[in-house]
Length: 305
Image 1: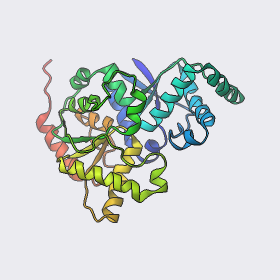
Image 2: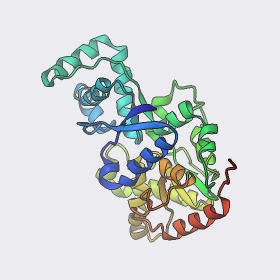
Image 3: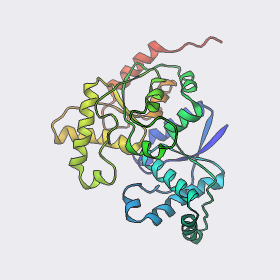
């Protein structure tokens, strides 16, 4: 079995532990083991930390990477921001010997050394490139009758600019994985725009970030989405907690459940919403869960042995 080091980041284990559970369940089903990365810290965040002190940001990021290097595992991230930080740091240090030397002089003080032997992968990118859409589709036992608003997120796209994933204009790789579950990925206005939360904005200027999220929620609702599917716990928080804040501040009445892609795939693989932590959100998911259970029982794939 292939094994990867699972980098949890900060938001998922503290706010949405169901994402971790879902990732481990679906990857195990696909024949990939996810091992805990003991001793990992915050990535740290790609916006604020990198802007203030690049060398410190690189040193903290590369310390996380060295933990995976010692295991000879590649790192798998379930968060766009963590992916952006760790992949950019990994690539920069591999390509710049002088920068690598500066960082290693800092790491040596705590007994670590960045060697540049491993890669950093994102859960959606890995599933698309290494597992493949066809194999994901074959693992589906309960096709989903859902209309899904896919949110790519900013920090998923930028680090993949050289990945040959057809990112120019209108990428489709995330949509293809969503539709492998049986769901329909709906098109909606401003699909590739930001959720509004990144770069410390959610903390510093909350109302402004909620206005951005409100526009996306408005367009998703107009497209007839049953739920939002993302690949980043921080975007997840913005759409989940943010919905309650928007409903209160702007007198809206949104009720769009928010799922991480691993949770959506887990449903299609036959895991229950309870196993995947889908009810552990601010947005009420009871009606969504009832619909999923009813639809999947009708759409179950029968395998003849």
